[in-house]
Length: 408
Image 1 (spheres, rainbow, N blue to C red):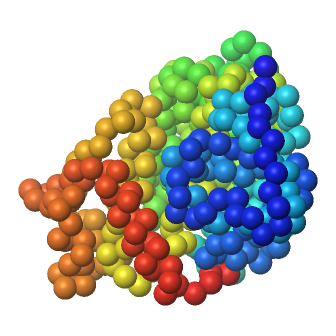
Image 2 (cartoon, helix red, strand yellow):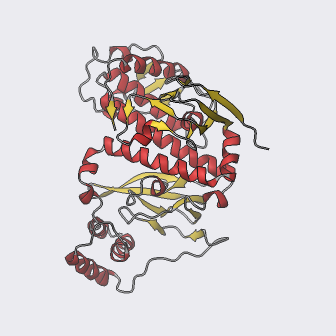
Image 3 (cartoon, rainbow, N blue to C red):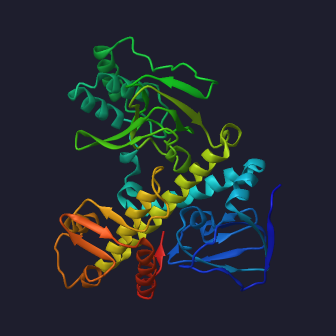
């Protein structure tokens, strides 16, 4: 039976405070309006407030990170408070809430990404050009990856794009495909247990970088999946995903063309889902993992935007270490309660991660003198991650007094 607590707030009451810990609750606003007070102000007013039906607190509850903003009751409010376990049960019975959360997060994530990569926002036509699939196909052919080349060309020729395809490029793509494999058709993989699960052999292609957007994302039920991206004309492997991992979820979050390629790394079984069917098809464990992915993406985006505005290199380095630890803890085999972390890269490499090219010990003296950290033998060691979290909160609070409002 669903256990929930009803909480009432009067106008002006503080519901939660930035930089404080969430004890594990998710909230749904039943009535009233809540103002979101943060260093970030969104151009869309809908992202600066919560209205009835909105859900909040799940990012901090799931990631175990502090609240990123302060919430103030703009009017008298009634809030439903749920534990994480009850929240997922609630979603099962209220799919419209899940879809609303997905929509809200998609808008917020798009705003963060456009702020992190303003060139993409200003050059949308170039970034989402259908012809990028032809360019990718040429690169694949140079590396004798003919199957990927044909897949990309077919996706270009058959795909529907927001931007009209260049007639001359259509002819070029047709000629390329005719030369490589004139009878090529997109693969139709056999079903495993139903029409949403598929059996793939090693090397089978699931989707390619820059193919048109769709509403699907995937779960690896058996085997593993390689996620890669073309960088400077070469394949860059982003990761090998194991059983239970989710991939392609950006399709339901930002509604843009695929930003990477997914291929079966070994014989595998995958499940294809949409936001509309997810609650019917998956169990609570998978639903929990999906929200972990969404929450982590939002949290990382928040941190990256914050780092862009930070002038103090000490703050940048502390935030980067916290993000690296969060990455480690997100791994399925990670010991969640451990406090010590050893990273197999040097201080110089850590500095490059935050675009600090010149090591000036005076500028990063606070970081270098931190007794909770050590740098030797090409390693960076965090002795106690909980002390690091407290330090990050301290430096952020200090910096927040100097930081002007960031419009997203």
